[in-house]
Image 1: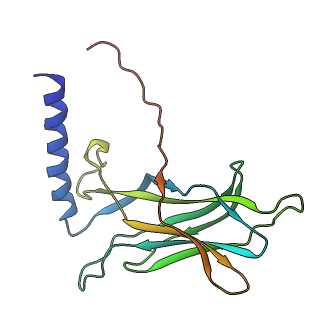
Image 2 (image 1 turned 90 degrees about the vertical axis):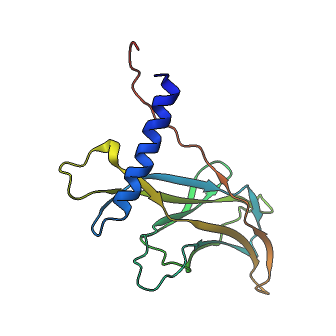
Image 3 (image 1 turned 30 degrees about the horizontal axis):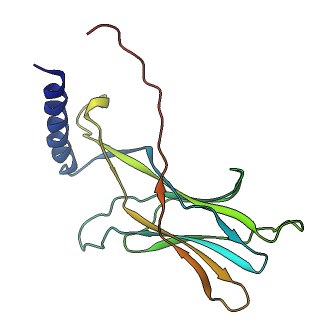
Amino acid sequence: MPRFAILKSSLAGLILAGSHFGAQAQTNSVSIAGTTSTTGIVGVTSTQTARLNVLNLQPVIPGVTAIICPATLEFYDDTGALLKQLAVTNISPATAANLVFKPPVPSTAVRAQIRAVVVTPSTSVVNPGTEPPTPSMLVSRGCNVMASLEIIDDSTGATHTFATDLRSMPAYSILPMTMGR
């Protein structure tokens, strides 16, 4: 059987197995690496404040337990230094969390250059009936969030900049190479 066909069959089996595990009454969840998204660089003056908003897009469904939606909200400067961070353990469905940042603007600069980052881990669901859980049988799902960045004028409260265009940051991992075919 060609290698592509094997991978395709394995993926289909994993998806079908995952739907079975998702339907179980009891599941165990484990947090693993997920999605990291960033805004572009924006300038903030000494008379402005930056606010990063994250909305959980999962609807409220009566009688259905929501997936836990943790997120980490962060601000970085243009050199990549972490300026401020907030770890939120759960953003309830249809609600938001935010992180406010008042950047110190150096006297030699007119404004500070910052970017906002949102990290949402995936949640792996395993069938509690299998001991120990088989790593190949983990089903990964994450919360669905929408982020926005506002630059607000301190004196008027008016929003001067509003951005919702976040880009996914690639995740890298090192996998062992296998010899032979």
